Length: 434
View 1 (tube, rainbow, N blue to C red):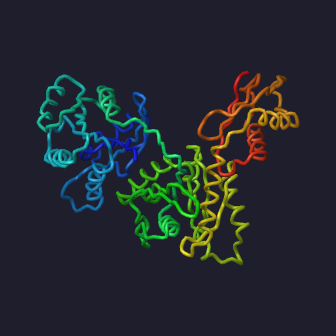
View 2: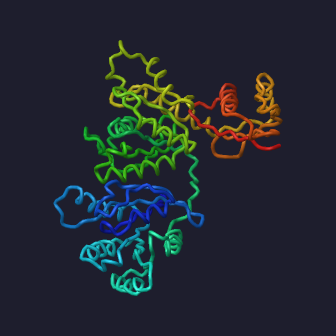
View 3: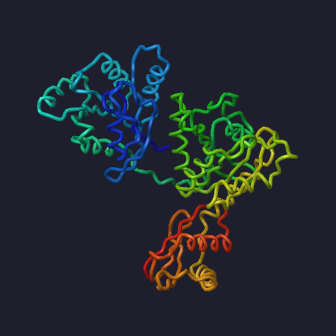
């Protein structure tokens, strides 16, 4: 699995969050002068020199403390060492080298990972002179910078981009299915039921699955790769440090997948976090199948599958052309049906429609209901073509592309879905000047 994770580590209050904000071009972390204010680990994406990478801002790092929070931060640096491809070790020129810096440096030197030392707050000549003492930490790649003003951060980013591997083209033609969802909805049970073996530890403790596991499935004439991920938690609940990295891995799994099986718990219904996960997959143009697990535990008299499905689709609107399947991973009910539908969605996502057929059908739909005029100007759509992307995208060529309203765009999408099978697949529509 390609690793493009960059983690910023260091003791509290050296300016990690300020650097993080600068790298991802936003203000996501809370920045404050009180030591240890970044209680939440944040992550975002950065793009530099043609490379995309994920940046993680680990919390402060405090050694030998009984405070649970600080102990969690401590193990976080260990996890960062394990998980990240590149580590930015941040120190502060105004305090000089502390015992804590020495301890972190020792851990990092033992790690055999790419480490870039960032000496922060070096914004004037005197401080640049003082910064030279940090060479004694023994890191070849040392950068003097100011995360507040941004000076020196360009060189650091150049060094990061150099160390991030290029995106590998995946030559495997097999469909990739990611199993995603909140902790404890039964993702591992679903994988084990499919594979017929205890591949993952299944316990009642939410978040037992720590890693995303790739398994090739080749039975009953089906052949695909299964990616089981650690649960994605609500942000407020990302208390346990390991959970944070589970979120990272789940995001990586979504990136890798062709189709995402989103598991929801039948007893809880579709929660806001499920909708967030769904939107994440939708924004990345992945195929989606919604699996309602633990359906065997629901009182059937009060809750029929039809009512439940109607409610689910209302929550997912406007993109609600999504298959919903009621399963029980424990009882192995309808799990193979889920796979069949997953393969169908995979094929829907890859289908290419002949331009002549596309124009015949869509021109008839446009003639039946032409786009509304804008300030007396008529919009004429002349031609439509499918774009050569790995997911369904269409370009409509017309005289006034700016004047087409969202409601008409939705009409065209509904017509495409009515005449061609794009169930479970987000699509993109562009209007181009003819």
